[in-house]
Amino acid sequence: MDGRIRIAFNLRRIRAAKRVSQENLAVDAGVDRGTISEIEGLKFNPSIDLLDRLASALEVDVAELVLAPPSDSEWPKPLKAGRKVGK
Image (tube, rainbow, N blue to C red; front, side, top):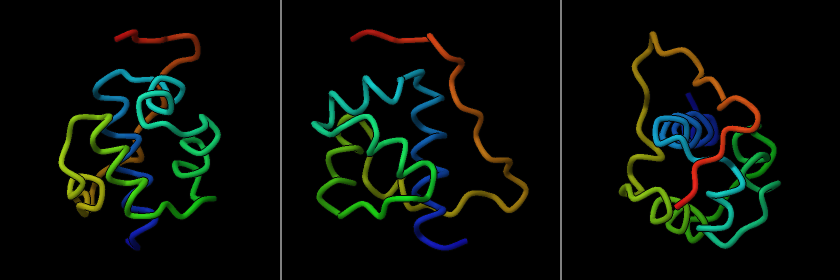
């Protein structure tokens, strides 16, 4: 699994586990919601600075975003539409 796929997988996994919408994560990280969508959709290659901001917003170490998932892991499911968690 290459780095871009690891980042997309882990970003969605962590975000969904914490029940944080793309919109809320984008606001907390200071980026556009579309950027989060493009990272998770493998259409955007984030800089290390952006990874630092995303990790900080998710309250995880940046290393969590590049960990290799277990080989039998399924792609994380997105949150259902309309499920927004406020801070």
